[in-house]
Length: 304
Ligand code: CP
Ligand code: NVA
Image (tube, rainbow, N blue to C red; front, side):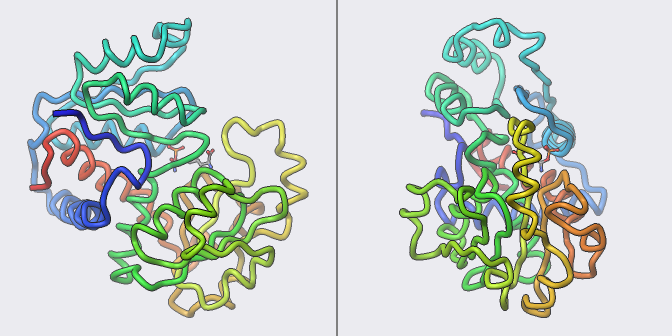
């Protein structure tokens, strides 16, 4: 049987995604009660990181250990990948030795090429285009705090980046409306927008996007790989900050999320991280449980 991959949210059906989110909550509750689980005993996850990470690395590595398996960190600095070995050759070899592969890289085509040649499931742990693992955690966190997100309004404030693209996919898959407030020239991918025009609206004014929203979300103004654009982006995004003014126009029960790392005083004011409606720390922790659910699903082809 060909391996299932998770390169974008569209690699799963809505039912599968909803089951994953529920399973993530079950795993979190079990873990908090101290119940041990050995569902992935002797299984190995290879983790290829071509960009930095705190949450993704810690959550995948801890997650594999908590399920009885192990994870191996591979950096291009000390593998042949960094010396130009073809991605397909690397995929054939690595996937012949491990049970799943997680990749964080620049071009989305890299994870697609790897997945095509891989015998083992491949997980996109962030590319320039998408960050689907973060959305599993975000959807799990929303559900745990507010119930189903179906029919809700979500406001994305800031860059039309990889996170924004995954929110666009999530809008369709989980059934919410996404208002995107972004400055001219920083809109999300035009084709993706066109394909999701029924559930996504692009606006200029952050307050318009946030009005009556049930969830406010943002991310850094300059993503990894865009360090040279930091100054220009600070200028372009100066009005695109989540702060009390925006929270005041949102629904009174609106939640606030940020995938982290946060740049306080840029895309989010420092006080908002600890705002009573902020679920940012739960969101970060849920990377662990959402991905444990994902690993079980991809490696075992089932959710126990
Ligand atoms: N949110 C997220 O993916 O964080 P890291 O870059 O620390 O992995
Ligand atoms: N958009 C950010 C997300 C980091 C988790 C980046 O790509 O750097």
